[in-house]
Image 1 (cartoon, helix red, strand yellow):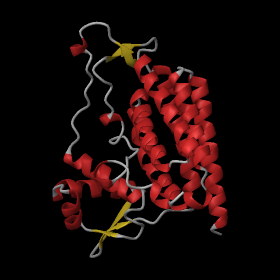
Image 2 (cartoon, one colour):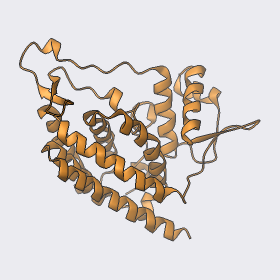
Image 3 (cartoon, rainbow, N blue to C red):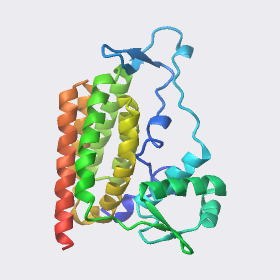
Amino acid sequence: MAQSAYPQVGRHGAPYVTGFEGAAFRHELGANEVEQRVPDGEQRIGASYSGDQSKATSAPPPETQSQLAYRIIEEMIVTLQIPPGSIISEKSLNRQLSIGRTPIREALQRLALEGTVRVVPRAGVIVSDIDLIDQLKMIEVRREIEKILAGRAARLAGPQTCDEFRRLASDFEEAAAKDDGKLFIAADREFNGLIVAAAQNNYAAHAIGPIEAQTRRFWYLHFQRFGDLQRVCELHAKIALAVAQNDEPAARRASDALLDYVEWYTRRTLESLR
């Protein structure tokens, strides 16, 4: 499969961002979904509403220009459209994205706090190198957070959200059968947003964003040599199906299995670079 099958998905030529701003706030539950109380006091997402559907709409807050700039720039960096070591110009981003200088500056400041870029005096904003040494440390943390998200999503997802996860499982299976990187990325983009929204844990959502951004940059850089798209699709499909069945233990196990593969792939890649 050609390398060009992976980038260039999403709005403005940039794929989807897997962080909190790019997932929970922009996932729309739909006009016929409503939150219902579940036994532990949390809210079930995607439950059917049999009354006036005008009361059932759960529209997300509108995306600010700063959030939009962050989402696009971060994803361009993650997918190596802006490679490590590149100097980022506010002026050029302003022209390219048609977003104001102030939102772009705010987005770059946030990326600097997360370590994705560095602000160097008299040099400007530079895209950080991909930290090879810390990859396994980040995977260790990512494993636990994603397991929390998958488990909570399985516990809290209502019928319509479960239907969405079933559809995504089918999309992952189709991507595996066709060896279709673009289809996988589109399904993964929606999967990440849906699972964060269904999990309803802002702390986990905030924590996972920067970690996934760094591990995804590593993935994009080395996947053509060491990755297995079919395996990745199958592992994502298992998580989606477990959530769709409201099977919390199975969702947590499936999340662990995905991170087992990510860790294996990372170790294999790091060994090849020594």
